[in-house]
Length: 204
Image (cartoon, rainbow, N blue to C red; front, side, top):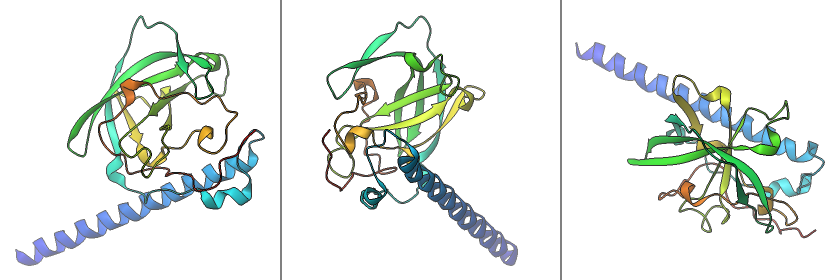
């Protein structure tokens, strides 16, 4: 009996280690693609030489959560302020609730009105947020996560904070980066995703 239990413990350990390794590889590939996009994008604030100043927390699967989704109805278009003093039109699409590090949290998903008619981005869901790591280990203006309408399945959506990224405003001025609404200010430090940029901020 003890031998069987020992073998089971070994199997569980190996399975967990394999999952952790595979997950780390997935996040590594995601970040490599993320960096490559800066070079491809014509409006990018960063050049290849700047990529050395991008930093990330180690991949941590505990920050990959399943959130319950409540689709919002009868919402009106509103102007979400941007860091350049202007604004962009968004609509509140859904509220999500989930447990993270022992806390029950709620956030709102938004849709960008100007992108609704763009075939490439028409299904995009925008999740901007601030948290207690801002101005410490992460960008003070908050971070973003991109999701899709197609990610919502059976009333739930997977949110991976390891994929949280900085707005362009973290690297340079001259961009219209939305300010995360107060309702998405999390009373917890999200120690996952992109950290503060350590290069010199550019000025246009």
